[in-house]
Image 1 (cartoon, one colour):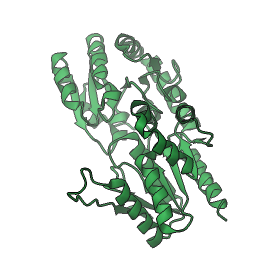
Image 2 (cartoon, helix red, strand yellow; image 1 turned 30 degrees about the vertical axis):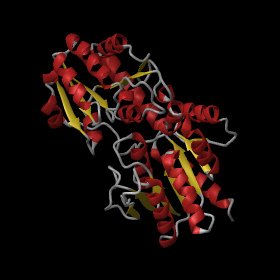
Image 3 (cartoon, one colour; image 1 turned 45 degrees about the horizontal axis):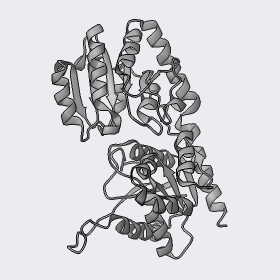
Image 4 (tube, one colour; image 1 turned 45 degrees about the vertical axis):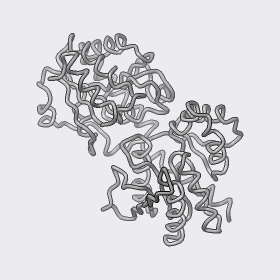
Length: 374
């Protein structure tokens, strides 16, 4: 199949999932055409059967804001014709599925499009109801819709009062690549052998509650020697760096920014802190679990569908800094229990979230949608 993919190319879960999906599909013989305003952060252009088409937006004085959705629709239609695409797969309803709908009309042929919901496109409506009609329309107009968790599917149907069929296809990892490897030299760059390595991975936005991760670590560090790796970047980074100094842990916290090969940093980690206000799935938790790193996370959104509380990680209420720190310390003081939980985390990933099992579900959906046009 020849598939057009549109996603946000920034450092976030939806763009990462879309890119990894494209790479996996290309390895299975499909031709992937990424269409976006910038090349996605993890896209490997050296991989066969992967192409990138940049959307350029003219900034005319007439427009207060560049009309990206329209430029994207034009580019989708152009690529669909030149590359003879079979279908479009867009990630996020707003504005990508709206642009796909317009591209379908521009081409004058039935160019099916599938929309994958990742969360913010749905929760945005809860904050600004003016988006409800266009979001509902774009979901209803999609030839296929997927959600990354049962939580997100149910919330979408409830929020928009839809009767639409939504397939739950969870996020995934390549289980051959995402696995723990001994990297002693990298570990020694950050911590002594007697110190724990704790990680936090996010886009540093308010919903991730980055400052809670620092407060949790400050309590951990008071009871066990350790270092904290803050992986990612975003608007809350400056405030987080300031808080680390205020808490007296500035010399034990490393702000690493955006990293391409997070699997290396997870391979040297003992625990992951994920104190988010909301997660529609919890991709960071999944990636950590693949590396035998138990997540200490919040019991929100789709996270309980990924992390088994007390088995493959720990789940707590939002803001329960004391509880999360206590659980982390209990594990760090019991290496056997920490190791057992890490192994259980890896086993859960192997059983439920490996790309080898998830990608065929997308392929089946593509074939189902295309069959309706035959």
